[in-house]
Structure formats: structure tokens, C-alpha cells
Image (cartoon, rainbow, N blue to C red; front, side):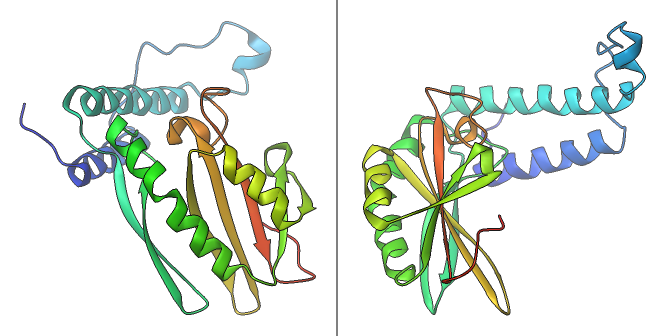
Amino acid sequence: MSDYTTQELIQILANERRACLQGQRLNLAVKASGNFVIDKYLKIEGLQKFTAYQDFKAAVHRYQRENNVSGIVWRQLTVKGKTLSYPEVDAQLIAVQSDIELLKNFKAHIIAFWDEITVGMDIYLSLNHGKDYRQIIPVDVKRIIYRAEWASLWKSENSNFLEIILQLGWGQPQEAAYRRGWPDSGSEYIHAVNPGNRPIC
């Protein structure tokens, strides 16, 4: 097998996902549960499509680990006229050990950018898997930053609203997003909004 790059793996997964969604790939081993109450709500073909893609993605992740293929893509975020380029693990890939080290090394740059662009904004901590928020102060954020291994950023913006989200995580980023890998992997989400607004993401 030839060596694939990060970008090639991303494209391969996108093509496979599309094929699975179109029903060109099914995991026929997935059957109904046998429970009438549950089965009447399940579409077996949908489960077969989903499972086929998950199986393929797991194979790509094995390939990444065995061949040390990075899952890092570089993002660029511009807020209030300031721009930061930073590494992030693609949502469909995993981080190999060198990726984790890069993320750890870049944490301070992301935090410095966050501190600069959120001056004067209200800060909220995401609670209950993003269903609720609690307003916090910068010293609370510093405590969470201290415990985190790596950081990531994104924003939601329209003509009269700006929300900047700081993800502070540890462990494998793919496992951290939805606490699938808890407690070895996880993350906290900090939301900055203009005064008087509440987070919406």
C-alpha cells in the first residue's frame, strides 16, 4: 500500500462517507435488534450505512497509527482584525503522538490570542454538554487553562452577534469532543460573547 498524506486520507473518508450515505456501502451484518418496540423506530439500512462508514473510518485510524500519518490540519481564525493560524485535528481523523505534542506546544499561542480578542466580553462556561451556561470570570478560565493539555478555537458571527469558543482539552481530541473517552480524554468549552448576550453555540 502506498503512503497516504493527511489530505488524501481526508478526501478518502469524504468519498467513503458520501458512498455510504448514498447506500453504495452497507454493513449487512447489522440486523434488527429483535425487539419489536425498538425495531419499529429503527431503519436498518440507515444503521447499515452508518456502521459501514464507522468501520471504514476505524480502518483509516489504524492506518494512521501504523504509519504515523498526522491528523493535523491548519486553520485560520480572524476576529476583530486579528488573525491566528493554528493546528487542529481534522474531525474525521485521530491525532498521532506527534500531533498531540504539536497541540500542546501551540496551546500558549491560542491562549494569548484568546486573551487579546476577548477583552471586555462576557465569559461563560458550558455545562451539561452545552445545554446550559454559567457566567465566569477570567481567573476561572485561567484555572481551566492550567489543567488543559491543548486548546482549539472557533467562532460564530453574523452582523450583530459574535461568539468565540475556546475548547480546552486533554487526551485524544477526537475522543474529547463528546466525552467519549472520559476520563482519559475530555474538554471544557469557554464561550465569549459581547456584554449582555448569551452563548448560542
